[in-house]
Image (cartoon, rainbow, N blue to C red; front, side, top):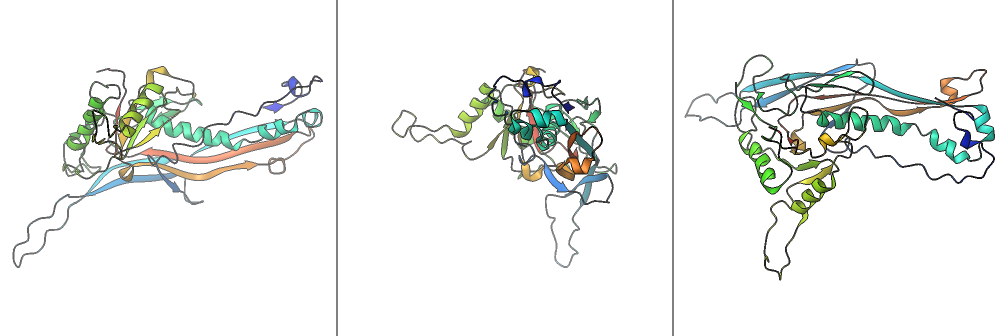
Length: 338
């Protein structure tokens, strides 16, 4: 886009105008959420990365006197390939706009393009959760985004396969989508925790009894947020009728609010996803964000100049996203659907 006196006449109008401070955008919440493991990809090492899981058996074997110790069983899980995508945005400012504009600070704010790349990254990361009940979606640029895990199922599914990438291992399945998709409540939270205790396996079909689920995540729906806060932070009056009551959730989870969770492919509100919520074990996450290029700004000197005398600014960044397995995260749509 070119910022000129015709496309934005208020910038150069004669009447006095007070410009309000530009709206601050959201910080990159998802990158720092712990749901995704962030890796820096060195230059000149290709535009793809392959990720896979490897599990040891959970229990040691007996060793009789003089016998050789049993060898631990190593099982490779599914593989998933991450591919880099490059994001970019430019803005041009004409010489007329630069010399006639009455509010130079407005121009300075408009050249702050870096946040557009970071905002897109946050949306892309969020939409891996938002569209986690489907195997793909079409993003705002018309690209088809694969949201499957290594077993070709969608992220949140009722029967993920445990068969390893080489066709061996357990034929067990596990569930990480809560049945009947209830709204967040005490009973629903206990129901999703039951998925942890009964539906969290390694690739040997053994229960992962010590996977610490430490995050309760929700969108920004006020009722859902307040419900989560009540469960995580409520206390009883020592002199009240419930004195001595212990809140079992007080230090169990960190509440992660994902502002862009209930959005469509373009980042507009989508009320169908208003009540999405779930829990996650960040230390066992198999969701990866690979950074090929951190966000950077290109100046008019770097983008070049021509006879138009425009000042061109640009922002660039490159990254990839992949989720190998859904074992570390559980979810409910919160809409009561079967």
